[in-house]
Length: 472
Image 1: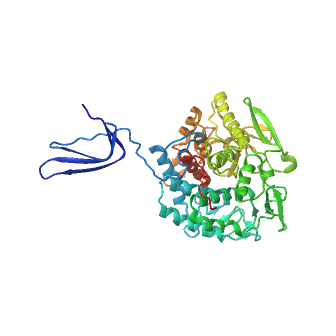
Image 2: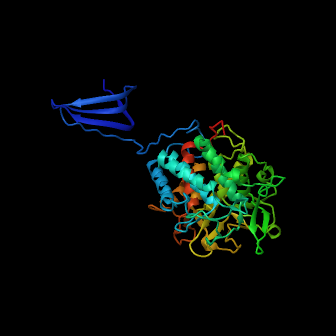
Image 3: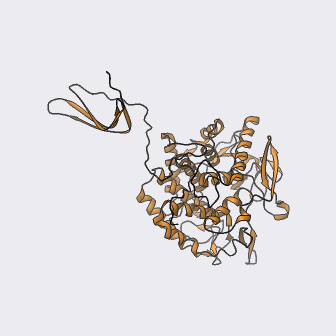
């Protein structure tokens, strides 16, 4: 009878030549005639030829209690190509790391950052460790330095973090990176709170350090009595003005960050006021507050929905089941499905590959909201002043990979192939690919690369907030 040997990956080979001329090779991890052996040694008096097939080329053995449990979208270990993508995305955080503060630049060489972008750095750090891109020593070195900096950041008017900081020094600055206190962003703080919670759930030994970051902040003006979120800005006369912050998509996601830390933000987490618009036979939800009255645009974008899915599985903040196949915040999952579907329908109807989100652009206006719907129009690309910028519409790399992770379809396969190689060695992924044929956006950012790493981690482990620590 011929014996059938199946070599399990990874193989450990130990080849040697004995004094009597026999050649031998020992192979660890073998199944022979259906029986698993720790090691098998093969000897012969002639040259041995060993061939293998079917190996993945990449293995990673980080394990949490709920790792690899079934979840929406893509499931399974990274392929070798996907692992290379993870290493490329992480390279951004090596190249643009600030050694004095432990912060990372939000955009390329410009030494400025926000709490949103810092949360994206934590996202990258957690994912890079879990995917075996970096080891535990590197994770600990970066995490402890970053938490120390966050713990000691100067605060806007002594309340909570400023909107922008100099990444190299940790000083409060304006958007031109000049010294100044310009206000607080509830959305940015909410995103950071999500990732601080993720960090202490996964790494309980960091919990005290994590807790000491927000414990310094005064939340009284950030969350009001009826559960709404407020940001602030400095007026021309130097006074602080507090304004309700957040619109459908982002508001509920950021509110979950506050809820994870025990705040009552039920009103901010609710979808109302809510309206719908029909685009390609999909009822697309949008915020019902009139921007002409409230002076805040209602952009419908992909990012708020995919962040909620990747990080929390569209679950309620108090859901500790770690069930990746049930979205306990059901309307969020349903709205995310509509946001995905309308973009697929646009491609089917027009041939335009579509994955829309906010993103940086080179030159003025530097940043656009590349919306599915805004200001009464579908596929409306606007800069922060509300100016129409159609030539800046793009396939967002982070949106494409995020949709690919959360929906396992032919269309998301196409999205993945559109952006999977849109990168530069040692600098990470470019922001995206222009819809008008003008090539790629020649900028790399912390947010883009952090979300891409989170999407790759989601494929392996499911929702990233895994409630495994009962003592936090």
